[in-house]
Image 1 (spheres, one colour):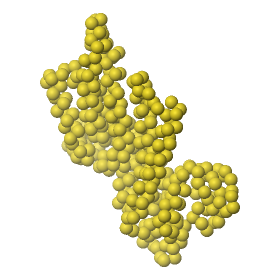
Image 2 (image 1 turned 90 degrees about the vertical axis):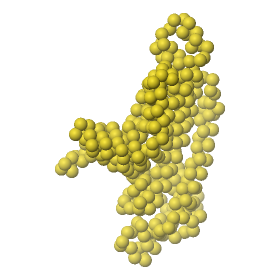
Image 3 (image 1 turned 135 degrees about the vertical axis):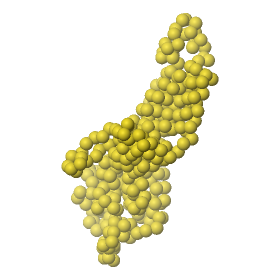
Image 4 (image 1 turned 180 degrees about the vertical axis):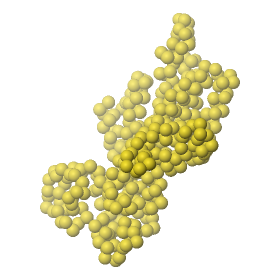
Amino acid sequence: MINYILNKAFYALLTLFGVVTVIFFLFNVLPGDPAQMMLGQNEDNEQIAAVKAKYGFDKPLSTQYLYYLNDVSPISFHSTNSEDYTFLSEGKYSAMSLFTLGNTTTVIKSPFLRESFTKQGKKVSQVIGETLPNTAVLAVSAIAIAIILGIIFGIISALYKDKWIDKTIQVFSTLGMSVPSFFSAILFAWFFGFVLHEYTNLEMTGSLYELDDFGEQTHIKWKNLILPAIVLGIRPLAVVIQLMRNSLLEVFNQDYIRTARAKGLSEFQIIKKHAVKNALNPVVTAISGWFASMLAGAVFVEYIFGWNGLGKEIVNALNTLDLPVIMGSVLVIALLFIIINIVVDIIYGWLDPKVKLE
């Protein structure tokens, strides 16, 4: 287990290095001057020059790349010269000094994702910290809907194979996989939030936290979670139904299931004690991929429903070319992908003892 985690950690670092490299060069070849974006309409030549010197925009792209690696790395090197970009100024971030060699100090720190171009110097880590929990709540709710309903309908579909109820479930699951999330979001928002608003009491748009009518206090509105969670959970729900049905049908043909039936166990006992756990392996693998992708793929759903999550923040950052927010968000999502995959591999090994983690 320890060797497995160490190997995964090594490959995770390589993956993150690749992600950092790709997103840096991808977004830094876009047209536009970052210094002008940060200053807005009030810039002059002196201010632009000062901002470029402060953030290292006046350096060659290769040097800026090394600066960015230094910022996001937990172990980084900083100049003792206050005029250099790498100077560890007070308030930039907390760091623990390891040693100083000449004019360079080596420190341990939390990754620095820089500051937003459009939010008056607000740190990207703060922006992500304020929006990621909302996306996590939405993703967990959506995957919970997909898991619970998907397993239930998958079992029903397998038990009534080729009957009308099985065919009906298959039609709806196929339809759920075929319809794009943004179209489902528009349809659900209009139908349940507008047409049937009198009966559902649901809004077309709204986030988890909303201000009251006086703008003084923030309240949690759980009802705003219902529609986006259902829409985001439709596609993984359809996948879980299909996988659970097919996996369960395969398990039903195993010898130990026949033995259990020969012993007189009821169908409910067979499913509960023997069939479901063994049929969950492909489901767990699929769920892990869907859960990770939800953190990145909730962009359209959040934007349409006005859900103040990371996806909506990414859209806003793309519209304003707020590159640090975009790059930081992509990097965090990539890290979450890696963590989730490691956790799922461990769960997979627990479900199936024949799988060895190496």
